[in-house]
Length: 326
Ligand code: GLU
Image (cartoon, rainbow, N blue to C red):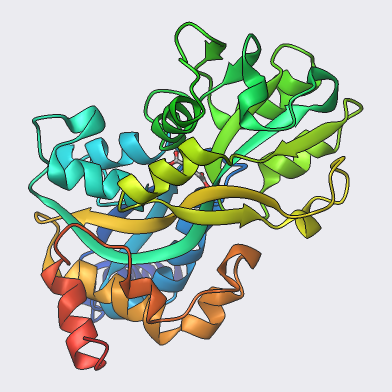
């Protein structure tokens, strides 16, 4: 009898737990993925910073943000356009080319590409082994140079920089097409003489490149050809590598080059409420966001609305209007 009673009690408890107790409100979760770059760049921690801020409000928005390491800007544009990723970090020059059907998208304008905001400045950076004797971009002739993997943003910047200096990347150098994350190791192993990387500073890649036994120099990308290039392309501007970030490099003075901006993009197919939530959380937590990477030190809300060439996504626009930013 006692046994039967306790069995009944257990059954009642079980029923209460699984069926009869009021179920907690189970909001539907929307999963969104941000495409970034190699893990030693700035895109990867940038995706992480945005995801962290958005995920704090998971209960409110039902959005769960994750980050993917990818081959970079060009890969990200294509994956966002294919619907494989909801967001991507993309160089401003690549955003311009994709929406206008240029470079990798020649004749194939990516009409559904939408801008959300811009982020940190990126410089076209050339890092060389000191023993390779490369002091300016003109010295790379005959050397083994990593210009970047197909899919990366920097590949076209490297080609533009080389051409501006009168160097044909197919015939005048031995061009490698490896991912930025592998370049510092190859430089230290003596398998390449230098590598290009369009990236914010400081970054893990250049810390790694300067931390080895082989001495490393940051190379200026300057000259009449480069000045002409910057004048001709609306998305390029003069920039410099702040060398205080890399005390182990041979050269100590800031290095002149040119640069672009990192931007955050999405597709017209991503729902307004998702883009609104992501935009709002980044802007409303701006001071916290800025602290998440030293490359954001120069960010202002106003600057984050500059350098966008694709139409602004209506979800982002809704927030900018509400906040009086536009
Ligand atoms: N700018 C690079 C690219 O578009 C990525 C830089 C980074 O990961 O920080 O491929």
